[in-house]
Length: 120
Length: 108
Image (tube, rainbow over all chains, first blue to last red; front, side):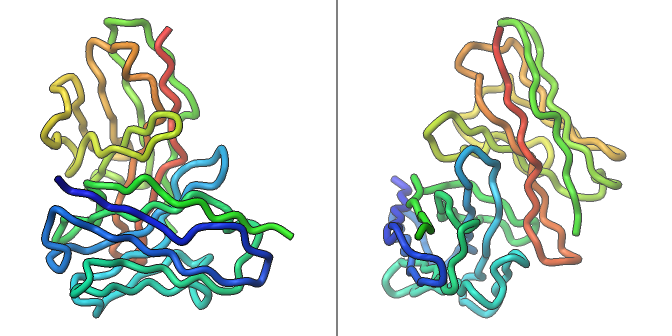
């Protein structure tokens, strides 16, 4: 069974940092692009970042460039999102998702999400 | 950056057909994917590559894409189809994944 389990969310003050993790099982992690998507309370889905199988390509939404860093450890089947200089508008549920495509990024399996709350 | 526009809401009676539009400039040259999200749950991929269905998704779900509009069609709508639906493309020019704003499907 394919599973993605996120962790690391929590309450953080503006300007603070958090590191999200996503542990996967049930598929060949090293063979898939991976993606983080977030959803602010009551809002729609927003793509955050994607990373290629070997980590050689990484893409970010403009609003997090320079503040967030996506990474992966293929030996540990884990995906990470390092978040720095957090702002109020980073408050959201953060989902990790598998991207099976060689082109046309899309997400076919999703975790249940981890909640990040930025508040003073 | 590329923009996808969806109607905020669509209502349909049970057993009827729901069409959810996703507008974008010349979207027909992009590949469109669709997700279903029920309250408190993670999104689920229901259509990929414009019209393909993942395993486990009923045949009642179909997709099309041409010109400036992509459409998710749900035939013989059931109460369990009530959810938010999002379209999504990969804009290779900007190397960005783009989601539409989402459409809330209400089954009357």
